[in-house]
Image (cartoon, rainbow, N blue to C red; front, side, top):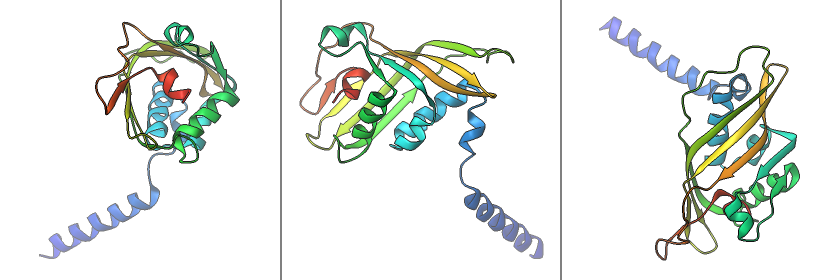
Length: 188
């Protein structure tokens, strides 16, 4: 009985200590390309513009797909434009997404060798759902994107982001769901 109580007490203390520590330090995830992309996903899902922008370099460029450019969107957003559009998406003063659900299907790749300071990971499938609080429509983008990252002082940062649309976009799947692109979601 005493061993069971001791085991339960140790379990309780362990859970308490772990809950105080919180999630793994995001700074540690900057040491790998896969970690940066994973945290980008986390920050999008939690609508943390502060966390999101810590992974972008000040020279960052978001490249809209050719499809979006043909629909009248610009070729690129710079750092300031991208952070402003993301803030609008995340915060209720903007379009105020009620729910964001992003999943990257990060392909297998070898992390860049030590001494490599630029790395491009291409054609990462993503599945993004954004429910807009203004019109209660869920926007769905399911395409691929590519990232160029730069290593500074052992940590990776995103310098370029390409939204890539493959195939035809119907524009909608019903009253409550609209098929779109990531670029179109950013430009709302």
